[in-house]
Length: 191
Image 1 (tube, rainbow, N blue to C red):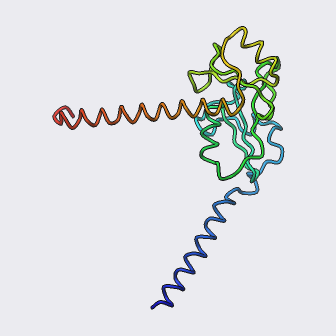
Image 2: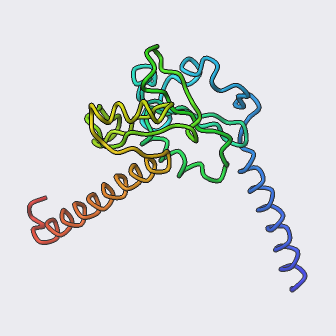
């Protein structure tokens, strides 16, 4: 009996190891993009989180390039936060943001480690009431701050602000759902 249990456990362990290895390598060869910035709006026209048109929101779009070669496009830094949370096990090669100060359209993309964000300004936010606008140079962000207000921050600051908004929304939803359930239980004839 112990041999069967031991053998069964070994088989299950081997199968689970194979399943997790397949889970890690779930990217098909045709999904790997070695040059994600080339024609990125044609290759990734819609946000993977909310399905918004990334061409329309080219001034706020972001692009995530994962360690396994997979690429995802988003419409905003808010949706980047959700992608990073969902796909955190993949690892990241690079994340790109647009240079809002650029005069060309679509705005050119820059790796977020060298980007400065203007957070909470009067500039229009995408997927958020608190705008988070990216600039290639700190000087351009400071000039925009003089006109539109807001605070200067990094990519980490922008992601933190986005995740705080998500957490606040979830807590509000939880409270609303509990209140709705309480009312329903207090007045069952109202349904």
